Image (cartoon, rainbow, N blue to C red):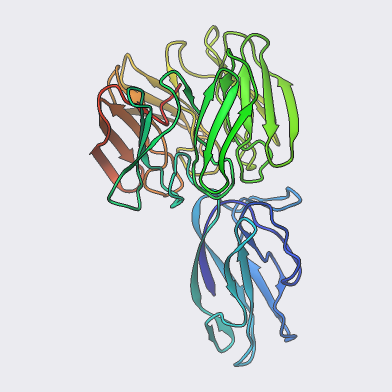
Length: 386
């Protein structure tokens, strides 16, 4: 058995090992792929976990995220070799050409790969959210990478800008970005700077990956007409979609776990979430109070965004877990705290967390409770709930 750990959710199903498509995501030879040696029973069987193929077929065996998946080959004989090619965006992440460690009658190896699909607010691409703040007084982003002991600062934007960080170039790293009255300014980690006019002054920036290509689209929600406007920088395609009303709050997320962001709004007047899921269809759920802070994220690691709120008056988090359907209530934070949920420990689950005047209080789902000093009073965490 060859076991590899895949960070991401999209795999390409191919016969043989040639002509791979590049969709900005990890690609691996899929189920029942021939091993090029001509022996009997020569198949590679990959147990895919809720992975989306290029034809959008869902193999709902388990879940997204950092998961070990066995890959086995029935190889009779003593010297039969297999080849496995794994790709990121346009370049090989790993290629084993007749060099996978073998044992007679099979293979045994550990291959670790990372796809460009990583955690939100992950500026270094290690699948863990990084501590990061924007300081309006000096217009600087301060970022503490989780894979490094040192922080860095990038002066970018104005004090009045709306923060819009996301992975716009599909390299697995969150890019620094701001939205300023109809103009987007992006500092992409791989493709460099881009200024782009899209939207109007009243619009709410909602960058997300609506087409599943591994890159966030420029997107806004316009309260005056309840319309979403989305522009794909890679294909130059424009989409508008009316969904919501003027007093609603946008809560974009992947609520059906198909790898595509869904249009969604919360209506304070009736405490209802309205969600247009890209695969599973329309859904509405009454959850929370009008004064709650909206904190949707994937708290149970099933690849689906969970409906969730933080109630400042109580200091409680209420999470409707999509995997089990159960309600989770966690007391964590004060009324004045800024909720900053993200996957800080890289286990594929969003962690409950708050930011308080330069201190991060994180309730990690796997690594336990953590409090860290980073930032100062007046700073704005880049993943603060808007």
